[in-house]
Image (cartoon, rainbow, N blue to C red; front, side):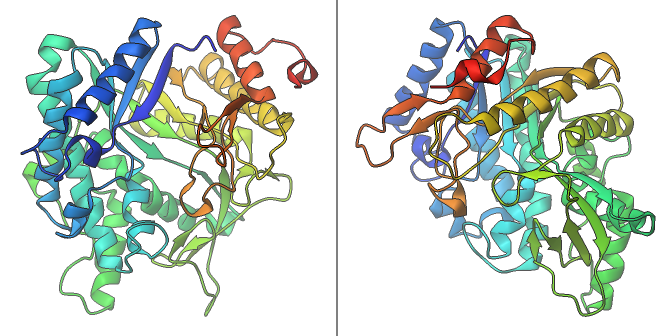
Length: 407
């Protein structure tokens, strides 16, 4: 396809079968080594994610990300991976979307399917500290020799107020869902976003807790986290409007429809199209998110680590996916050329159809169809694969009309 890099994740348990660093799987070591070597042999840079929601069960049995020791467990794992592959990998993602490793996981939505709001907030602290610990290990032990870059990949919708009266709840919703996981790392001050921290402290006391459900950082932890990045990794798919919940209105615990912790309801505008039900199409939202990052954290490098389109169709002529990529890439180009946002990379999600969590194999994000009924998992390019290849090779969006990539 003429691509410059390939992003993939390492499965923690595939490399460390016990979850701990006492045993390295020879098969896992060889598997990822072969993949990395194969990519480099074809001049494709590997972009490696250490954690994409695949916590070893042995560690989940010990409390998972709600256990403070998870910081040490992840740091040990990261050191093993860096030791094995840092000489061949220049770009690293520590945690993919920490928000989804914490909130839905502790709200009964995705694995491990626990229902514990305090656990979700404990996870927020310890998964961030785990990222920082891994970053500092690379910074001190590997960066001087190999000079690579490390960051975290945060997920951000574009949030805008439904009406002018909803501005305050929109800011709080943004802090709760997204800034919670970026402010400690990228802001000059460090620590939790002040508005969110004050809100959670007040709310926790009103619910009878002796202290905030969102555990405070120590001064040492604030310093550990602050500046633990070499670029801003951002996953973006969709947009929502935000409004305050009405009295007695039921809201999802943490979903694409709202956040009950802060009484915020998420909706969309009629003019936003739709792929998979939750994926409302608003290309300008990506440009808005890129500009907000620049405004909030300064002129830092931004790598778009995921952006893509899902559907339930098996049609190889996926013109909707082509239209999505074209419209979103146009907004990225505007952000670069007109807004002077320092975007250094763009990653399409995804190369292949795969298992999409609680959507299973029914939803498709891939530019290549996979026949999951075939033991060989036969892959067939969709029209979008031809389009994306043309863009990658030409380094331009001016690559003709959609019909030329039809099968």
